[in-house]
Image (cartoon, rainbow, N blue to C red):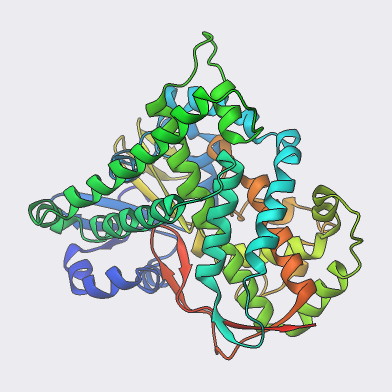
Length: 442
């Protein structure tokens, strides 16, 4: 198969350039349907990428042979120039060193300390909902997720517009990066026109804001018991602490990865519940029985069906809908030869909808994740938080936050929509295109 892998020509890519820029997923899907689960796309200038929706190859690169694969320059250079070299973008030894240092801050015990904060931010944000009016729910979920990260990360109470500014910069950097990724042949123009320079200026502003916050905290003798305290107290094996630059890299990544994916997943879940009132009722029956005196952690544990709805929503609309890896040595997967330097793009979106993996893959069915079903049945082709050692460090944090937000909303409101279908906008993460929902008090 090494040499017979189907090829999508560069001329075909150019012919479809404008629709790829808008939404590359239909183009990917057509090619998967035509060529099978693995094909090569030529990108011009002698570059090409292998696209795959083969769950076995995804497991091979992300888990079984992960040491032989690095994140591609797309993440380690292009994304890193905007958000720094932290957990998400670093490779090899640097990544391992950071992961070991940061992992304890996301331990379940630590989550218990932060979860009260998460719950209070959720309640505060959801009180802004205007009942009986159709509202665009995505900006609301985006604010909610951003504030949850800001509050959990550094107990931030925004007196000025600092958080709003950080949010704006994060979004601007993403817009520039998307253009660079989807139109690599125009990169010279992005440099020449000053677009990249102005975005870098914005990200420097974000770094300065965070640097001030860190310096202020270092001077303060108060303990906040938040993630920033934990990161400041963390020590490498040689006893050294993270310097400000590295801390800023990690915080920017926790911000970007932490709020972006959660707000997408929350919005998709609410849309799907609005489209499936009978499933929404099942969630309501589960959450309305939750006693007031339960701790946030106990609430999360009680909401099993709510959790299944979120898991199923992340199957259909995975916020991290693709990942990529570069082979750092020659490798073999079944009869596919992977030469050193080969870039592989893994489509979780396609794996999660593959008819050989799932029964009725396009149907929203939370029962797929019923705990009575053996997890092994789907774990090999379900990657909502990635897989292997680089699996998302904040997955328990995100899941708890989403369960609390969905249960809080469904308990208070009946959610309806006049939309006919879920429409998507794939950027760095998978976003909803429109999210008009109506909340009626129960």
